[in-house]
Length: 425
Image 1 (cartoon, helix red, strand yellow):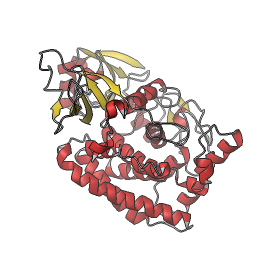
Image 2: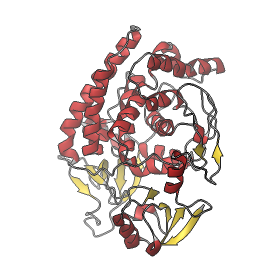
Image 3: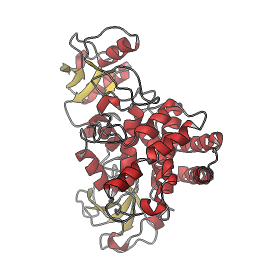
Image 4: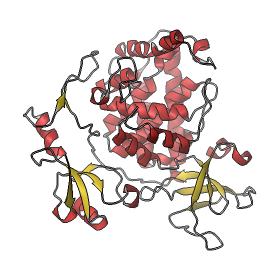
């Protein structure tokens, strides 16, 4: 039950669901969070006159409800039975309220994106080698070395925790020769960036990345001709494609050391919030929370990549589509968090400024997501810069004529003859 409350009456343990203003206008990283200390209360008082908190019928906060459920006590919250579909399904009652994962910490950028780039390149190269080895072993019907894979994932996690923009920048270097390969690499990267935003622990980040890396590994057992078919699939062909989930699970079950969260992702990343997904048609809280996260990441990377049957759309348009699909395909709270994580103009997006200049988003400003750092490619006359300057829209608020400087639109890769990939290196 949502309740309006004056910020002077806030207490530790309350779950803040909504503010008296847009989240974008505040310094808060999360749209919806539990108050954990006096600093949180003071920040809320500095920015808002009132907020909305979530309570049950007895006036208890969501945090208190979760504690009771974990302890096996009775509550007045309606609970929904989860149907058993496999050994990897969560077999417990879950509150009707679809909650976000537990926030363990708030990570802060500890290194500028320019300094982090060399570390990110090295970590990405190791990750590429790991994915190549996995695919080679699977094609030979051999087991892959999970320890080596976790080691390479660890390098990615450390880089993303220092500054996620460097790895996000590198996700734009798509491998046009193999969508399955690039998708495994980039979706696992996106998962870490999103998990960092959600405040997941390092162990949870590892399980999340591993799940996305292995989610489509079963496609190696489906004919390449079918996977690369450019036209519309028949019902029989689509049913064959959907079997990749079962094939992926066969490989996963044969691999010792995979966490349950990872298995949940592999099995359920194609399930949808409204029950329209596959393989089991799960809906809402029936879908494990890490699989709900993975589904968003998987979809975003897919629609921003060239595939045999669809051209990539811009990152900005992908964000808009995900927003349109909230509460249908994906949980609304998670979609809002994902968009807040990426920014309205995600890192690597090509944009045009009110001055007429064109640039690429270099990194996000977490407090003001509409005012990121931009590497300029073309000047106001659409002439290329010799050495691309960088501006921070937090500080650069006016153009040379004293007019407000802001992003006016996202533009598609290739506009004005720009090949963004030449700048990502």
